Image (cartoon, rainbow, N blue to C red):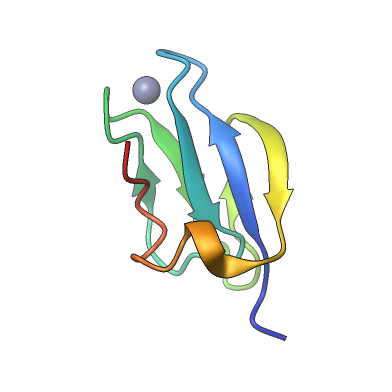
Length: 68
Ligand SMILES: [Zn+2]
């Protein structure tokens, strides 16, 4: 319904960040700026290793920007 979130590990700095699976804007790593997701019109194209799929939004209520 609301779509899924993915915890993506940045290939450059190994920062893990939660990315919305249907992100409508480009998502960059908060640490190094590496592009982690680009919008494709539907689901986002994820550029990195998805370490976890987050079905519940308990960890991503702040806009999926990551907090750590
Ligand atoms: Zn990074």
